[in-house]
Length: 428
Image (cartoon, rainbow, N blue to C red; front, side, top):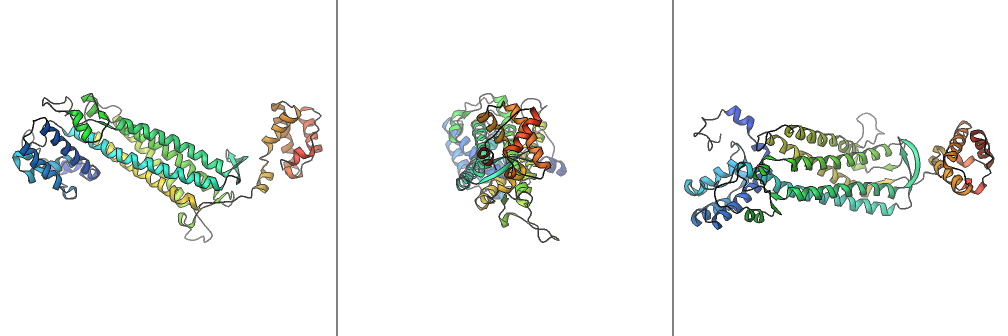
């Protein structure tokens, strides 16, 4: 158990309590950022003549040789683990000055932002890769006609390319939101201290520049006491996950024999332990389910911070793992789509389904309005009655005649309507 912060104000910690509050198991991904922060901080302290060159050199040497894989897992967190390792390597005099003019409060906020920048870049890259494949597959299916549905009822024919590009558009908005979130993440809290900066003459702009930030988080209370950059990112991840979930749902439904629009690649499906004919959309089902985890992480995090007093609270420690979990979920789902889309097979023959489901009915109403000067609402009523009569007679649009349409118009609105046979035939 780490004893670095004990023995002054507080008596030795209870092992069970220390284990309960420790974040070491979740801090591994922050270790490199914490080391880099300490390096930048030491450089700045030396430049500002706050730290002796000899002590600074020892600290930088210790940090350069420090292995983040061998940190003490009994420490409270990665910040104390790094400091303990440096103390051991650089000695008590030099090592004891590593923490001059900074707090874990500003350090952890900085480390999370640094790691989150990398994660956001990876995620944006993954979104772009899926978009690239959507375009590639769409180019193959510019003339592939499918039936699209509203309320899960046959609605209108569209091309498969048009359908795919709808998801491109959704992902484009997601990409824009991720880019926007990145701009707010990329400000440096380091130098804010515990909450009121420090009496040492530090140079916050210098450390921000060394760590690749666009600028500093200016208000020190806000710098250490806000996690809205996490909840904002989780909100964006929630939207990405929802969009992917809806895409997955479409493909799950459309891959069933009853719909028969697409066939999924074998390697992204599973079968039944008892029913040998089954081809289940298991990868897509998991993508659909994991969206709920992302939504849950967002809600849990927003709830955790909603009533906190200002500045730093250890409650913050509980939401950071949810951020990383959601990042991993969304990134994994994007990678699955990226690999699956090029191998997707599409059923092009929809003529039979189009006739039996009357998806050309909207266009027939348009023809009546455009070519025969029938008010659209009247045309809508006529075509509705016409479709009903065909269904009752167990016929399709392919069987329809102008006389049948005329009879429907007379019965529905009392209109004498004579339509050219070729206009009707063009819709069959």
